Image 1 (cartoon, rainbow, N blue to C red):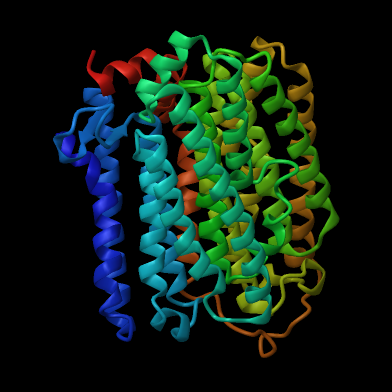
Image 2 (cartoon, one colour):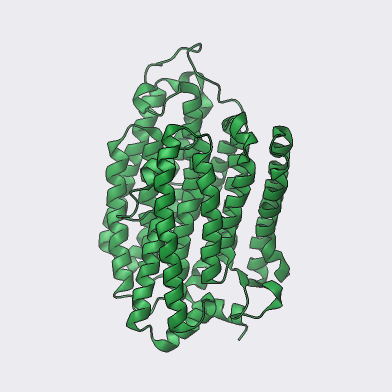
Length: 493
C-alpha cells in the first residue's frame, strides 16, 4: 500500500517522457495527455480514500529508513491537494486543445505541463526539505519553458524577470536549507520537528525559519514580494496562466503551512506575528490592484494576491475552525482561479481583447459563457452556498475564536472588493450593448466550455456538499495542528 504514494509522481513523469517522442503528432499527444490525466485523477482520488481509511501513508525510497533516506508522505492535506492538482491539470489540458495553437502543441507543450505537475505533486508529497527544493526546481524549470513558449516580445521580457526572481529565491532556499542542516543535523520534516522541539527553537533556528518564509513568500506572492506576479502571469496564454495561478503560488502557500505548523511553531509571538501582518498587507495590496484595472486577467491575477494573503493568515489561527477554513479556502481558490482564467481565455477568443471596457453584450450570443462567469464570480466572492462561502465562514469563525478581529474585518471588507472587482467585469462584458456583431467576433468558444463547466461543478459541489467534504478537511487540519501524528507515522515511533 505504501508504494501507492509514489504513483501520483510517476504517472505524469512517465507521461511527460513519452510525450516527448510524440511532439510532432498533435493528435497522439492529446490522446496520451487526456488518458494519463484521467488515470492521474483516479489514482489521486483513491489515494485520498486510502489516507482516510488507513491514516498517513509513507513510501521509503530505496527502503532507506527515515530520517536517513528519502521519504514520501501522503497525509490528508497533501492527498487532497494532489487530487485537486490532477483535476485542474485535466481541465487545462482539455482547454488547451482549442486555445493554445498547433505550434505550441508541437513544441513540447504537453510534456512540460506534465513535468510541471510532477514538481507540484512532488512538493505536496515529499517529507524532506531538500527534496522540497528539488521538486520546486522541477516545477520552476517547466514553468520557465511554458511562460516563454511562443516567443512573443511580452513573453520574453516577462520571462526574464520571472526567471531572475525565482533563481534568487532558489539560491536563498538552498542557503536556508544548508544553515538548517548545519544547526540541527537533519532535513527530514518529521525529524526536524522532533529536534527543533528538543532544542526549544533557539534564535538561530528562528532566523532560518524567517529566511525560509521569505523564500516561500516569493514563491507564493506575498507582500511585498508579489511584484513579479502581475506581469509574469499576464504574458503567457490563458491556459498557462490558469495552471500557474491555480498551482504554482499555492505550492508556496502549502510550504509555509507545512513548515510553520510542523517545524517552527515554538516561537509564534515572533514568527507568526510577522506572518500575520505580511498577510494583512498582502490582502490590502491585492484589493488595490483588483479595483485599479479593467483588464480581466489582471483583475483575476490580483485576486490571487488577495487569496494568498487570506489563506496564509490561517497559519496564525490557533483553532481547528480557522485552520480548516484556510485549507477549505485553499482548495476552493485553486479550482475557482483556474476556472476564471479559462473563462478569461474564452472571452479573449471571442473578442480579441482582455479589456472589459472593450467587450459588451456577450451574454446575448453566448449565454452559457455569461452564466458560467456569473457562477464563478459569486463563488469567488464567497456567496452561499458555493465553495468560497464555506471557507470564509470557517475563517471568520476561527478569527473570532482566536481574537483576530483585525483580520476578520479586513477579510469581510476584502470580500466586498473582490465582488466589486469581478462583478464590474460581468456587467461591462456581458450586460451592455454588444460591441461586436456575430461576423466581427474573432473566434468561437466551442470546445472551451466543458473544462470550465467541470471546474464550476466541482466548486458547486464543495459548497453544496460541504457536509461530505468537511470530514476530509477536518482530518487535514488535525494532522497539521498535531505534529505528533505526522511524526509517529513517518518515524514509526
